[in-house]
Image (cartoon, rainbow, N blue to C red; front, side, top):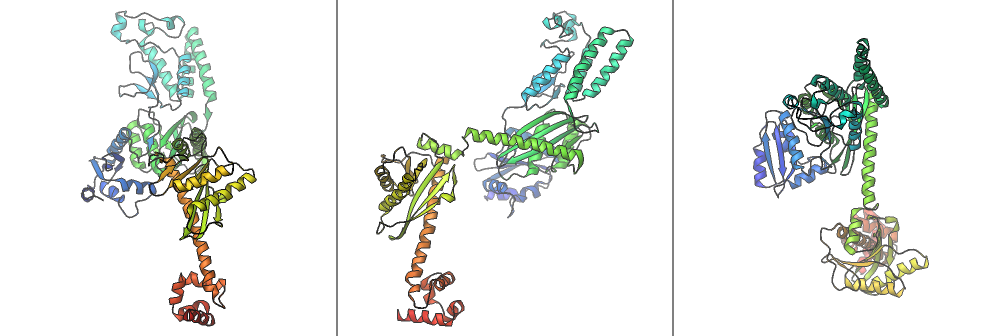
Length: 605
C-alpha cells in the first residue's frame, strides 16, 4: 500500500458518501456508497476482505476519492449515476451498451404516443423499459388499433389551431384520427382517450373495461348509439387482451418480481410486471459481473438499473434475497414513486412460487447466453480459438498431445505424454514412457524413441492423429520428432516445439521462432500444456529414481527388504539421513535386530 493511500485511509470521515477506488493508471475501478465512509472503506483493507473478487480488486487499488453527502439516500443516487457514467470494472454493469426503449406519452395539449430511447424530465410519461423491442412494437400496434391517437409531429397549440395553420391528413379520412389539428375533437375528449391508453399501459385493463362499460351505458341512455357502438368495439378488443393476461394472484396488487441467475462473469435478471394481480409483462436485463460477485450486490445493482429512469414503480418489489442496501433502496423508490414502497422476500405461498417461476426464466436466459457464446467459439474455449489463429492452423487444435523428457545426468530417463482436449487436461489419456534404447543424457534420441513408440502404435491401431503434436524443447527436439514422423510415413500432421528459455514457439522447416504476443491466450494455453507435461515427467522420474535408490542401496543389506527400506526412506528422507540417524531413532522405526544389521552394514562400508 502506497503512503498516499495510507494517509487517505487514516483521514476518512465517519459520514455518508460515495467512494471511488482508482488503479495506478488513475482509472476508476470501483464505485461504492456508505452510511459511514470510515468503517466501510477500511473494511476492504482488513486481513480477510471477503470474496476472491474483492481480494483481486484491493490488490489493484492505488488511490481513492470521496464525495461526502448529507444522507445515505443522496449517496445511493450519486453512486448510481457514477456507475452508469464510468462503468467501473468491479461494479455490476449493464451488458448492453445501448439504452432500452420506452413508450412516451408527451406533455402536450394533444399528446403523442411513440417509442424513444431518451428519457427527459419534461413532464411526459414514460412506460418501460422494454428489453424486448418486439414486445414494445406489439404494444404500440395494439394502441393504434384501439385508440385514435394522432401520428403526426405537428406542434398543436391553441394558437396554431386557432390560426388554422394545419389541415387534416389521411388518418382522419380513414377514421384513425379525430382531427385535433383542426380542433374537430376537444382537448378534454382527446386527453380522456389518452388517459385510457395510460391505464392500458399500466396494466389496468379490467379497470379500463369497467369505466368503458359505464360510459357505454350512459351513451345508450342518452340515445348516442354511434358512440355506444364505438365503446362496445373498444371493450371487445380490450376483453381479448385481458383474456390473454395470466392471472397470477387474487389480491389485485401491483408488484414487480426480480430473479437473478449468474455463473462466472455472466448474469441475467428477469423481471415480472404484475398489475392488478395479472402478469402483464416480462423484462430481462443482461448484467456484466466479476467472478465471485455476491448475489445481494447483484440484486441491488439490478434494481437500481431498472428503476433509474422514469419507470412506473409498484407498491411491492419482490426479490429472492434481501439486497445489500435494502433500506436505502426502499427510501429511494419511495422518493421516486411518491408512495410507500417496500422490498421483501416471500417465505411461502403464491408469491414464493412466482419468484421461483421468475428464477426459472432467468436461468433459461443465462443458458441461452452461454450457448450463444459456445456457438460463437465452436463449443471450445477462447484460448483454443486463439491458438488456431496464432499458429495459422486449418482446424481447431481441440486435441493436443505434448511430450517431455526427464533425467538426472542421463540416469533413469523417462518421458511423459499429456493430452488436452478443448483446452482442458484429459488425465485418463496421459501416458508414461521408460526410455529403453538411449544411454546417457541425450534428449534428442530420447524424443525420437518416444515419438516413434507412440505414433507407431497409433498407426497400428488405425487411430487418428491429434490436432496438434507438441514437444517440450526448441529446434533440436522438434527436428528429432519430425524426422521420426516422416520415417513412419505420416502426413498432414501439425507439430510445434516450445522452448523454455524465452517461451519461443518453433514450427518445422523454420529456423526463426513464431512471433506470438506474450499476452496471447493461445501462448498461455501452450505454456499450460508444457508445464503439465513437465510436472508429469518429473513426478514419474522421481518415483523411478526413488525405487532405484531403495533397490541399489538398502535392499543390498541382508535382512532388509523393500518394505523396510521404503519405511526408512519415508521416515528419514534419504539414505544419508538414515546413515547419520541415532540408533535409538532407528530402533523406534524398524526394531533392534534390523537396526543392528543396518549399523553393521554402514560400519563395514
